[in-house]
Length: 409
Image 1 (spheres, rainbow, N blue to C red):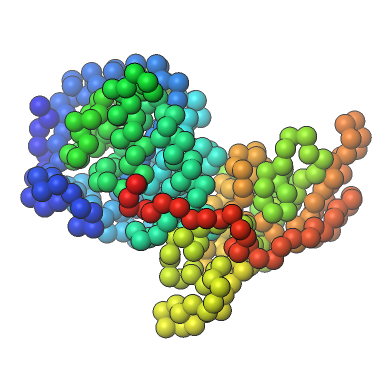
Image 2: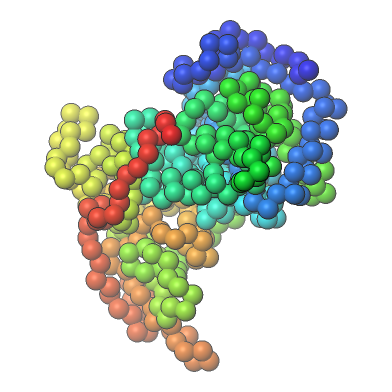
């Protein structure tokens, strides 16, 4: 039996409903038990063809803050949360992602720490929104999930062999289906799965459904797990994103990824003062953040007592901030951020759709094989460059239906 390490008679969170028996009391497995469970988890990972992470605030609480009661951290945000550095858990999961052990990550947090630890943007679904993606701002509890994030989550829900849950109370939010569905399918013969593994110090309503249940810190479990997998994580270091603020990418002028055989590429220019726009299909209206509700609105919006005209998602780059890992943007008078790692992701063609593009991007026509390459910049071209015609509006495009509430299935 795990031992109690901190006793509390109150629920884990005041803003989530929970069973009357559930408290924030914390438990810890005996070391020998935890090691045995890690051997089991390593075997599950070796058997899994598709492993999905599902993470909550607990993995970032030490550096960002949290809303849940805990014996380890105080409730509330840490100062300078934008400059927070990843924890060992983030680095270890980033390493497992790069090694091909983790195939997808459904992230409830908004902090960008997995990407700062090196996990690819193209494989992380920030289902509740992000501080570093202006097309997918943090979703309020009464808001709707981004339509593409929701569909991606549903795909992971249906196809995961194994789900590893870290730092989540599994309190009944819409996205919890990632964990509960795999647990249900572990008992199915029609759509079988290995089930879900839960790593948390506190009890949850879903503990009895888990294939494997750890009462331990995620840092501790992951150190033991890497040993069991025969892997070694060298000294964790912040992801070395590009020093450039302008890159050539295989996307069209609306931010859609081009096919590999395309003969064109586009400059994504995020240098200071560059004019940018949010791409279509964003979730600004669905997220329901008051400071952004004029962006994509059809009529004036009252923001903190001030009437704001409807915005088209147009703006500029204010500056690059390496300490926070982001570009600071002014979009229709509102301050937003884009993670610097998005440039690397765009250059690699990891994502289907970019969150922003330039208002008048420069397009480079690629030369035939064997000929002299043609280069261009967004300010002056030395080869055949076309100033593309783009739609100035980005949010009134049909087909951006908002579906499914943050809280419920």
